[in-house]
Image 1 (spheres, rainbow, N blue to C red):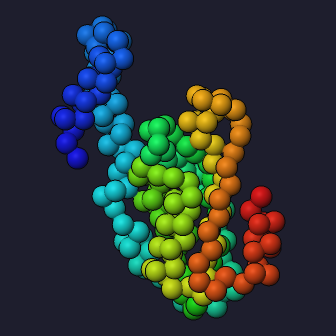
Image 2: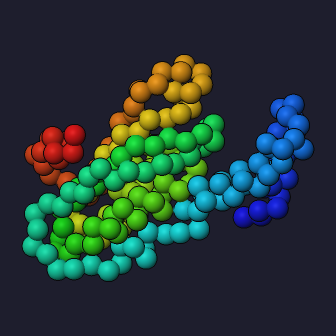
Length: 180
C-alpha cells in the first residue's frame, strides 16, 4: 500500500469536489482518510490460516459462535457496512479456540467487500482450514450506502448465509433459532 499516494489521492478528490483543502478543518484530512482506509483494508495482507491452524480434540456435535460484531467497506461505494455474524460448524474431531473464529471474521471483513462474498469466504475458509463435517455462516448487516444515500432507508438490514460441506439440514433451523 502506498500511503503517500493515497494521501495525495484524497486531497485531489476533495479538491475535485470543490473543497478548500488548505482550510483548517481539512488540512490534515487527506492523511486521516488515507490512514483510516489503510486500517479498514488491512485484511488484504492477512490470511485466516494463522488463526485457524491451532485446533483441539473434541467430540462435540455442534459449535456455534454468535453475535460476532464486524464492520467492513462496501466495494461499490467505499462506505461502511456493519452488523453481526454467527458461525456454526459440526466438528470432525477437532475444534478451534472461539476467539479464532472472530479473528477470521476480521481477516475477511477488513477488505473491500460484498456481504454475500464475505459470508461465503468465511464459510469456505473454515471448511478449508478446520475440515469440519459442515459449516454455516449467517450475517446480518446495515449498509450505509443504502441508509445514508440513495434510497436512504435507515434501519434496513440485509441477511445472508452460506453453507459448506455436509451441514445437516435439520440443524439449520436450530441454528437460525439460536442466533436470532
